[in-house]
Image (tube, rainbow, N blue to C red):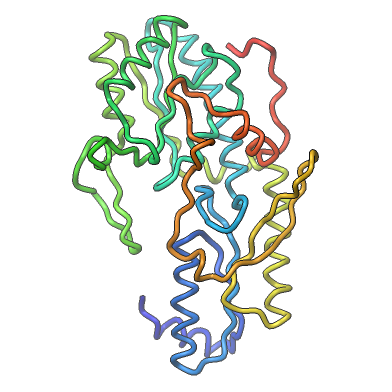
Length: 309
């Protein structure tokens, strides 16, 4: 990190409080800037505000941004399912690739409206579980033969048993934080499904729309984004520094949350993966515990008939 222009800017504007909004990379940036301020003798408070759709920050129940993206993905899963079913023999299988570089929170959210084997998705691939290509192909073919269509949801960085991202061993891009980016595994797997089953398999990759579609904003997310920002300002006003605001879920039947805080060093560069009880099953479903965790975060849910598809 090039520290000099940062502190030149802070000094020029007489800034003594720095709020950094983001995920674990942003938390690491906060730690590094705070350490640099101490070395330089610059009086600076650093209070981070959590925000990441990946929902992979440790020390917090969930992250602002996740509920809205989960809302989008769960509804999009129903949409691509209806489309695949309506297309019939022309293109009855769809693979949708979602964000989630190191953890499968977003992919798992696709299961929110799944009630039985016919409902989408019929497979969820997450970075936490080794991706077995043959098991995947068998599962998708079985779903298609049974129900006349099939939907798979996969995280962008699903990995095979060897630990390599599906498709290519070499990344096509590495960002400033050292994170590699690979060719789309959904495109590669769609080709394999088409060759295996003999019907067209489409692939979808929503990209940044899944974190920016205003109409999919969760009411819970909207409210909590405000309260974590307010909490960060209040923490700075009382002289706190080197912390990140957290969200804590109340242990009650009705969902409520409150803010807390954690030392920034406890969060920086760390990844919260899906716990075992939240991992998706081979059928594309998730546990009741995960859906109970997720449902209040997406805000008002869809009013759906007993038979979704």
